Image 1 (cartoon, helix red, strand yellow):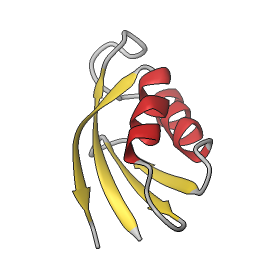
Image 2 (cartoon, one colour):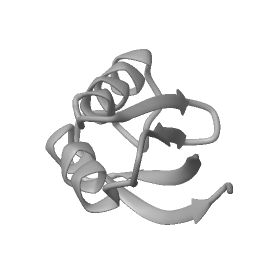
Image 3 (spheres, one colour):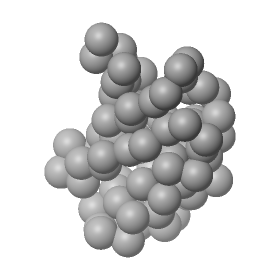
Image 4 (cartoon, one colour):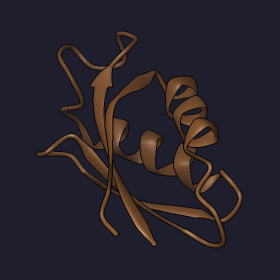
Length: 79
């Protein structure tokens, strides 16, 4: 199963939005730290495609992303 998260800057880690590889790494690492979840973060689209085992924990992923200095602006289920 997969869902997609659109990301926006919440803290001044980058000047405007998620524009650097370090931000991409930080978001990827944060999502991957949530048990049973794995992410592929697209820097250009400012999206994270998150795969999960069993059931998704969207709130835990959002919290992990917030701890990395970003926020989720939308969630869509890719099926």
